[in-house]
Image (cartoon, rainbow, N blue to C red; front, side, top):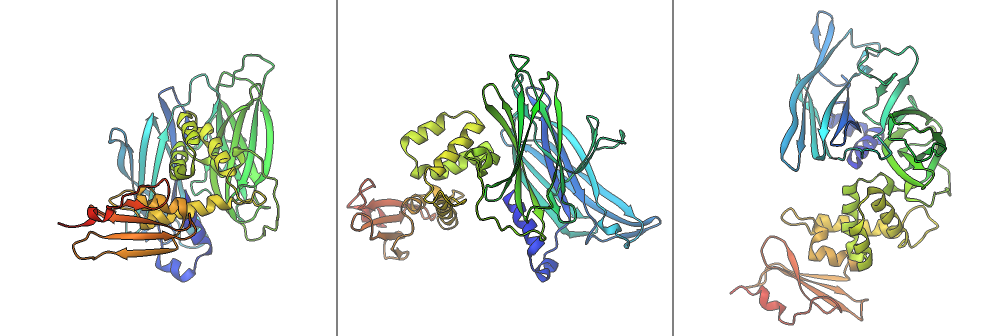
Length: 460
């Protein structure tokens, strides 16, 4: 969701002249997974279409706006489509004054999704102006909830949840509540109250006196817990619906994460569900100097990572991990185990624990980003290349010499590090011609050494 965060913040703070030149269809899309059976989950999809900037057609009852939406859900393992269809979203407004253009068309639909890894592509466009469009891409891993194991569904963010005078015929009615979704995942100074809906499963314990505890954390973008509460949950063989509300009016503009942790108080083991959202509230300025950060991964950035995100960030960090750490991570078979490992891995390398940021990690990830931008080749990410590895471990060289067009020689380059072991060099060569510069020789202890490395570059 980082890309979505960038877009949202850009829309909130960006130049109005730039925004006018780069309008995008006001269409939002979100989803949440709920328990169905041991092989399948029930996925609900929420959408929201606002007629702002759309071309309106004059019809007898007012003005019609119409969008064409295409959704693809493809199993990346089998390359088969679970869903691949178009549908039309349209509505008529009485006129173009009096706030009618701020009224959105909102809906929900659900499908059963078997276990697997899926790509979701949603494209929407104004039928009368196809340049006004939006495309949303997601990769989702579906893991059915384990039978007999306590767990939490995904969190559905809502703009309102009603439990009195509920319209049972509403498409948003479920489990005695009318849940009005917020697919944009944005709250503001004008709508600062966040509602949320989730479901708790398999709440049974060996002894009737034992209880579950549900902890709620509201965490800002710096990993600070700004709101925390707990409540005890009675045992139940059936699903338990949990709803909540948080008034965000006292918090500053930022991206936040809502974390729900269902804890077995007998073993102190937890099942965590999380959801990111965004708040625009210029009325509050963050003046806090220090924060009470819980010494646990639950209140950290890692608590919201998927298994794929955990694996990726550790793969990027393997160059600075010990063999023992690599072995430990490889043996982990739970998502929470991976999250906690990464939290401790980076915390142990924090050069300034007194600050909320981990400066070491921030610098390392900047190197990863640089490597991916400058050393990628043939669809392979730059951090996996030889130059990327050297750059991640040793940083920016003191000097780089480039030789792209030497007579009868393949392209090569030499990096110099003057402060390592009294001065070392790394020689890289593009042997294949695809911008894959392989490490051919180095004077650094422990790296590959070949006094005849120039011969590999000679074109005969």
